[in-house]
Image 1 (cartoon, rainbow, N blue to C red):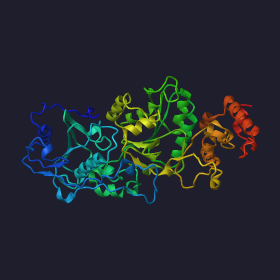
Image 2 (cartoon, rainbow, N blue to C red):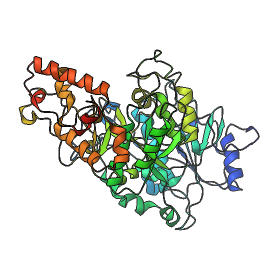
Image 3 (tube, rainbow, N blue to C red):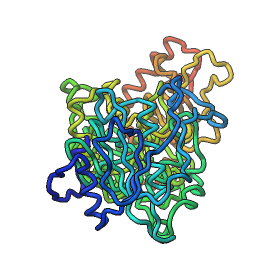
Image 4 (cartoon, one colour):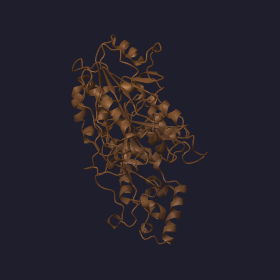
Length: 508
């Protein structure tokens, strides 16, 4: 993975077994360099490090052998009380004034991306903590550069040490000069999705650990969504933008659209609040021609938004009910849990990077999605992700048909965002959620969620609502579903509701 070097520098090929040291010595301008060694002993060292500074092996207790990746990434947690297993760290007070942290990452024949190994994660976290806790400080305002070096056949976890920060690579080592503010932010998060961390949202922990120069830098952040291959979600994207704006956001809104979105629709999307960036679709190389998932890898274009530090992607079939701005404090990739150890990519915080984008584009040919879509691919590429609370991406999914406590499928009052599954509100009559008319789709039906979407619609000006018109084709389809529901005498009785949707006058 790490062949992508953002800012390559030309150096002669190192002549010694510690070739990384020659690079670092040139960067510092001297060889009085303090080095920490992580997961390295005399048997794995090619010889003494040729520094006139000190070289210290870092002692830490290995994570308990009984801890599995599934313990760090459970399928469900109690968001108020669940805790992660302990990942032991060194006694950091014993390691000070460091210039370089050198580590050997455990990897039994693995590649750098997609590995789910707890000891590998521990070594990466030890290195990251040493960088931000034990570097040689120059002042309270700035810090002396500090490097991370990874030796052996495997590089680091790219979720922590991103390819943008790779400054040199040889056949047997990788040298990184990380942005310490980003590393600090990552280390404020739990070691897995096993618990939430409100310190990240509050920002208190991060402010306490950042320099004055870092605190004055304003992050560049944006909400984003994508439209490609058809105009079926134009109305949804307009409503999404309006709901974000109604939440009093301070962030930009950026919409990626391919050439299947007409100029007329683009004008409506701009009027709704989106900045438009035209894109070319990206084909899923493992899909069949004309399949539903043929072009869903277009989502990878999000990583091209490198003018932003963070982007929160939100699917267009979504409504924001409370401000989500605070969740930009989370590192990428952060998302709601989906199932097993995976995340739901319908809403996710990510860190754009052309280097990451190029890597994703290369790896898409080799890495297969577990579900055939972009979500499966991204989960394989980013196995170490961070959990966001369920309330910011509440799915209209009610699988317990016999749940007498919530037979009306009412959504909770404290949610911050609703993700509409099944048939979308703007495709249906506004009088009720038309998923009720089909037994196989009733698990997605919710009149309370439907009403929330239409509340946003009602606040939109006419030049925007015209993009949400009911078409004769839609009317014919859903009249047919109502008739079938009536003939089947479906017990929910929604088919009895008289349709008063004002949009009907345009199709009758």
